[in-house]
Length: 549
Image (cartoon, rainbow, N blue to C red; front, top):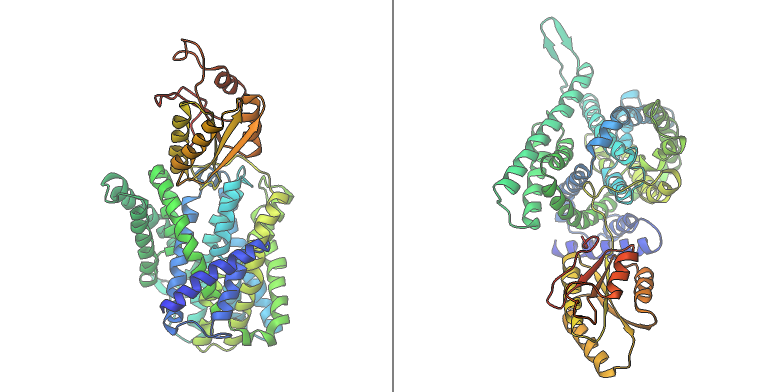
């Protein structure tokens, strides 16, 4: 088992990075690794790991749904509430119906079996959609109209509906007992109960998420049971996983929706805690993503794809281009979305992976007629739509969506920070370098150390370089020397290197040094568009536009 874990993590990571460098989604490389290592090709994975595949996938989906909840924006959801609700019901439901009808034509399925296939294919993949939408939010695409938030919420709701309908159809086709209820003189069949079940599962899922968020705030923020972000994530992840497991044992609420709701309500109840957890779950997803997609690849049955390849592709095309497209049109009818923004739903809301991997083999194991075909089409949907969706979301967002202002309180904004430390051979250089190192450690930033040659002083420059190497020993840094007018060169180099902040020492030659800034410092403070920090010789820092955050 340990050898399998090592192979999954290392090969999944590096082949994923190779795919990324080839301008392909990393999950393409991870799925390929799973296929090669899996029982269909190399058979290099331990049976114990394969036996745990469903549980590991569940853990990975829990992580990504928690990330989704921690990235939702209440104001944007309120603005686009009706669109988000319609996206949760219409596209997936109409795709399921279209797939069911096509399955009756292509595979001679009866209506119940065709609709069961439709429920599997119509479900959307949080493993592809959630990271894609969160990345768009971190870059500002579509945020003004809450488009990523609407897609995230609609995706979670649609999976609740289709999973309930799938369970009902499975019980019917497997000839298991699927009884309704009687209320007084009114008897309701399982099908008539479905709308009530949807409302109950969604409502209780939201309520349970709210309660769990309050528990986490009490434990981690008020009672201070944890001392750092790792411990915060440990508690939050385990309690979120508890919700998912509890929902399988007590299926009166949606566990996945409860996890997403927990993250959403954490933002409202304690924004600092939500920010810490957001960063921690970003780290967890780095590992969970590899397990999820490698194990997805390992679960794909290549042998059953060959004979059903063309019919399967036709079925997927009809389901997406007719059924789901009609659902998108009806969902955004009357909204303030432009036609280009509506068109973005095609790449953004079509990916299949997680649900298909979890449910694709269930009809076959339950002895349902046509189970092999259902498994083949489910596998085909993963191979076609997951890589396509992961590639299309970042590719078409800049072409179809408008870019707005990023809200750093809702998403993790990934940026590589750089600091420009301008130094000379005077004693103040040590203070400047020390302050630059302090900020760089706090923000994992890179430091450019700029020395502008004014006078020939080789011993002083060598001492300065040695001092730089010593103070910035654990910081990524680069030494730069140039000639010219000091303030102009500082601004030029800062712009060329993409610096986020400039740090300089206070220089002057009069008895008023402790009161007035030197000419270079004053010039930079008045003209620089970047924050400028001016460091005094006794580690006193003068006021500046803004410190690095």
